[in-house]
Image (tube, rainbow over all chains, first blue to last red):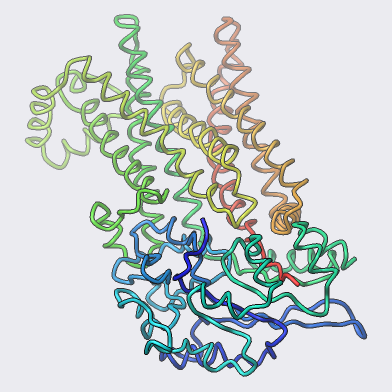
Length: 217
Length: 364
């Protein structure tokens, strides 16, 4: 299964991310969520090596609105829906039973659970608040009058982009596009290669996850 | 979870890098392993009850009251376990009424939770019907046995109600062919409790669970063995004599325990040699501290009934069951069945606590 051309997806460029967390803060503001609520968009700082070869990479993540939506497949009450019209994965909180099965299925750790125990996550700013995306009309691009997702709008370095696959693919580097087509991250998100670590990138592109560990040793 | 986190940190430190993002992997509490275990125990107990009915029919006049006792205890244990499973899973959910209205809300039949809900509910209905047919009517009214205690309760609450139930059951008691069909369908549902294994096995992100053959098979064999064991233990508490029927069930538990042990060993070796970082994290967690003690408890819980069931079963069939062995063997078997129950539950708890989700590997 692959992403439909008109289905929305995220693009992330770790080379442009400065790790400022503006994306996660703006997400909470757009959706009127408490400051201490679990983040729909997280920024993790992954590091390697020791001084003076220490390196840290900030990684901004949220629900990637996967083309195969593993969360949708396991959701018993059909509360999670991968929409045909724009590919956005929404949650109908009026059906959610709060079983947390989706959290196990999600490869990105995207589902969060509030005081009510119901699931909420990024809806690509299709609507506002938990469950706000459910039942909304097809997402329009900003050129057609739609809103820009908060995380994209407020990203200081332009590291996050979102849009229909056909449009995003025109904006990414040739290498990122090639890697995406080859199935990196199982075709769920487009990520720009790190510019400073070609050896690491090549090893993982070769499909050898363990090589990360071996190289670090 | 703190132990797991510290173990994960150890794994990362050993690897010498942290170019991965670990997910919390703490989405379920301990009510889930209880649910996953009791559902299969209900299946095992139902199978015991249904098979005891079958044996009684086949043996005809040669049958003794033991088969009837085993049948009643089997259905009683099945109902109690299914109820416990239901309560355990409901206690975990955020909106209980939606789960109770499952025919309306649980509409995704690709989800093992939906499939499992139907299996567990239907199995409960079958077990209740079978138990009512065993407890009430003309024959049970003249029977004796500890498993008839629900009759005593009904008689104590309302004697006219008992008369009504006896009369009703005699009127609706189905012919043997229908009975056989009922037990056959119920047995399919009982075997269907293998769904508890599939609930975990289809989770691609957790290498510890993602074994589509081993985990469901192990859930079924260990759970059914525990269900049979629980039924036999209840029966043996009141009927100490070890006869051929009892020996047959003890041998079945022994066989299922042996298969469980083999599957456990095979799964463990697969985990130990897996290259996946999350599998390594799970292996590290399960070979550390209390979790490692738990692993050995699970192993022992399979070994004890395997050996005892084999020894006592074979001795009975070979007519070499000495009075001493019979006197000691009964309580020992009850103890081993109790251990099987504890081990089966601990096994599922370890699967939850030792679970690590595939980390997100940061691709350069």
